[in-house]
Every structure is written in structure tokens, then in C-alpha cells.
Image 1 (cartoon, rainbow, N blue to C red):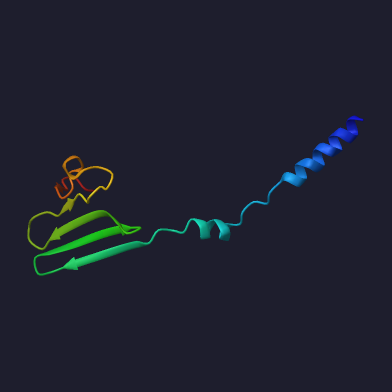
Image 2: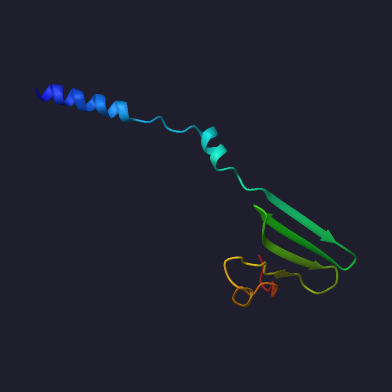
Length: 96
């Protein structure tokens, strides 16, 4: 009787088991975000902007003069501009 219960339990477990989703199916559900690197340059500076999934992640400005480059904080949609510091400069002091 115990063997029949174990056999029935194994059959029920196999009937309920789902096959693992393939890598292609999970990639279709969760596509990789688009990564863009935009470079704007003129005679005085070079601006490099990184966007991931259409949202700006970093902005780096490199001047063509003796002044050091700096980063600009992009807009953070989760917080108001007053709290996020959007648009403020961050000078690179010790960059490795």
C-alpha cells in the first residue's frame, strides 16, 4: 500500500512539473535595454552622454582648454529637481 502511495505521488509530481523556460523565451519577455552613447563636440568642449533604455545615466563634459573636465548630474525622475541636484556640476578631482 505504501508503494502505491509513493507511485501515485511521483506520478502527480511529474504531471504538475513544468518545463523550464528557454533562454530565448526569457529574452523575448525581458529584452536588453538600448544603450546609446551620444557625443556632441564643438570648438571649445566635448560632451559625452550615456543613455540606457532612453534615460540619461551620465553626462561628462571635457573642455579643450586647461580646465579639467566635469560631470553633470542628469535628471532623476524619481525625485524632484530640487532634491536630486539635476543639472549641477561635479568636478573630477581624483579620478583613476
